[in-house]
Image (cartoon, rainbow, N blue to C red; front, side, top):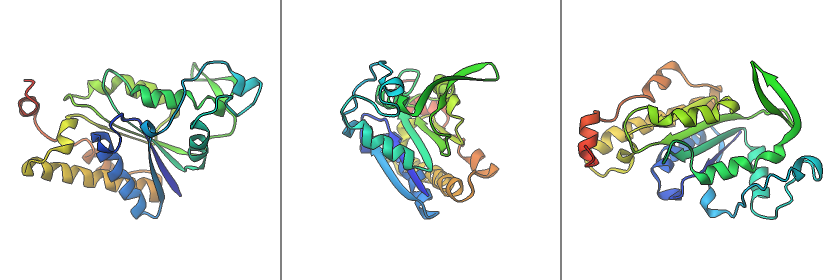
Length: 224
């Protein structure tokens, strides 16, 4: 079992997003998985040119020579693929979106229809489970609406959305205690998904636990 995080935070290992991703991978590792946390900011990934050579000229292979080829191999070798990103403006970061666009070689130029929605067939049937990990510095769940819609087509097995994300790296003891409790739940989610293929109802509920009231949070970030 291999679990890989493709981390689209420009801040890399110093990001609040990585605080969540690391906890999830810790849980997966405790269940016996081989884990890897890939920081996309460390790789040279050219933007997709929309030339469709990967479909018609060199099926399954992009003609551009950059770091995407080894990343595609890591993607294909993973049993659980995690897309991790902060929400800055509406959606995933450009860093992660660029990576997702470059997954085009895994598609074939044949259209399929499911429930009135149109997509491309995969070159090979997907066997991976997908996980979405995201945080936003604002309170409320509405900030994840666009991201939820964007990732729906990969039918995620688990989505972890953390509002009030600026608390994740707080050094204040009373806040750090709450964060540690929530990260233990994230770790449990990683363990359960790896071992059982799904998470329990209790874990799913606890993932949505509030970290702080909205008035207190707005005062904490001095934007109230």
